[in-house]
Length: 434
Image (cartoon, rainbow, N blue to C red; front, side):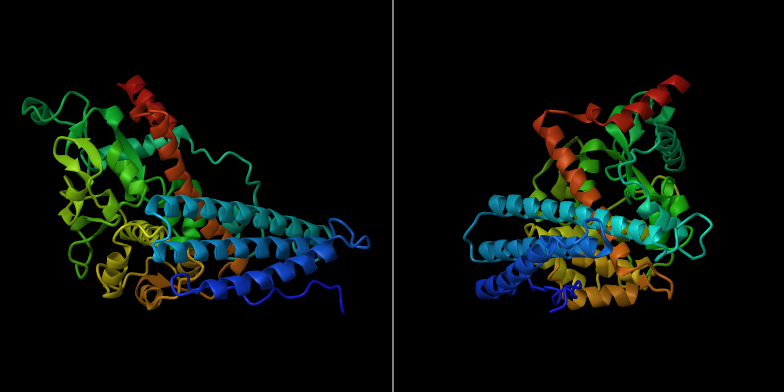
């Protein structure tokens, strides 16, 4: 038998809501047999550490470990479907599994970066530089740069975006607003609720996370979109409680009339029915449930980019399904009818939608995804490799889960509106200029 790295076993695709425990255990047994074989190969004294073969075996080992975790998630799904565990236990177990999968994905990417560097040093692969030929060199360089470099965005860039967004939405309270008693001096208007609040309570909320970077945004959404990442096209001024609910995917923004071109009228729709009674802290909006099917009253003609709203809509739905949030079946059933995005809009790359869906739920197989692909994606002959796109999807998922974790930690520590350093810097800069 050859000791050359063998192809991985057929990708484990467990339809997570249609599996049996016996099927899961059978697949788990096969994984463990493969793991034992890999362990034997990796312990071979003749195997040169750091060689191409050694790195490839480590990659296989990490992939198998990740697939075993996905089986764990499938088993958790079976437990909740049979009412053997409660919703909180299910959510906690799902989140723990998801975070471990994300962490393993990072390990896998580090190994692939190591393999690429090895092959470059051996002359087996061309060194990637800014002068390299190719349509997506900037995206590749962004992927392969040192991930330990701080991802924190520039306060100057963020502050500039905040100012522009305030301007295009006319969010700053006017003398008329102040005289009417609706606002105080320097107060800002929340776009979703329409209510004025002190400026430290109103956040410049990104729709697509800024930490993805312009290069990856260009790749995901099409050339030129990266330049809009730090613009009002990707930002809303939101009351801090609504920003958290939006980032958590509890509600989404969708067209009122999907056939309208261009789309001018938008509404908020509750995705997580379990958050219906969540208190917001606004006099005009007692609970989050009041946002369901509510039209957004834009104060000016400016609108955020439809493709960015679509991205948030999609990732919120995928997360809703993954964690089986209350009402997720109804949400997905509604999506299968083609509502609320039936208008063909080529919002993001086809391969990235599929990759994101698989990263969020490895057993996804609904015709829903096919419909979304047909109507709302674009494809090109030039694209990154499957592994590279998988890493982009993993980063999206990591950013999303990280936001939720950060919010929960702040709530546990009793941190309110003053707990967000970037906004503190923005407000301080605003104060210095006034």
